[in-house]
Length: 284
Image 1 (cartoon, rainbow, N blue to C red):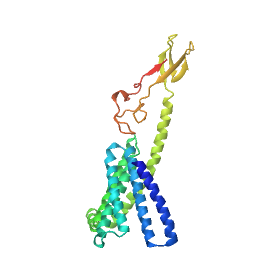
Image 2: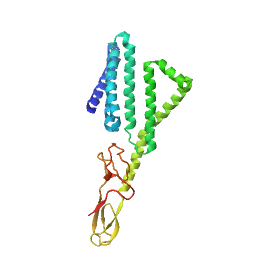
Image 3: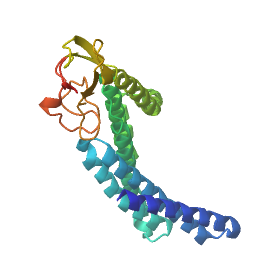
Image 4: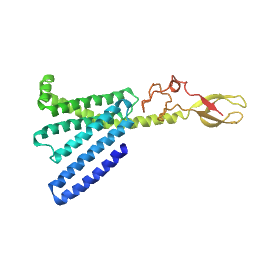
């Protein structure tokens, strides 16, 4: 499905570029409508492609939301295309535009939620940032949907909650700035965590295990991979079976019950109970 959306998106943008060139040369209204139609289709395919991507990479618990966003994108695109070509009767154009706007807002919101939750964090405060963005986006969606239905509803809610619309606007602007900054910082935080986690994994490769030489019986510490006995110089290779999830995530020293990468439950035999326990090394 992602491949279909990707190719449709690329074809749509190519047609948009062609229509833009024709509009610059001809200045005809029909070409402008074709350009608007191609842009609507291209943007819709982009949203559906990203939603399908987040559906595969994000947590399983939110796949229904990504699928619902894809479903809402299709009628929203059809409505905007119909409005561009003036197929909709004049009497219901305003109602159709409001309905299309509501579907569009929901599709974009589901895309934003998929973006936030595609970053899988292990530290609690990082997860709280994601849930804070989810709460903020849900609040923005509610305001937009109420504004699409009737602007008077939003004004009545603001008077009831704050009494002064100006105070609410200032708080809303501050909240938007804060949530936008956190949204942009999410990939940076995720990359930093990956670098730190990769450094920890590299240090784990320097682990030494306690063993007795099978030839001379000397008790000693032996590093992983290839080594030799300190007394008789017997070559000894120490292998460590790394506990990994099916997705490939290293579970060494991980004490949780579910994989932070894919969300699969971790079997009890792969869980790291405490320091010094876990998979047993083999010496040959």
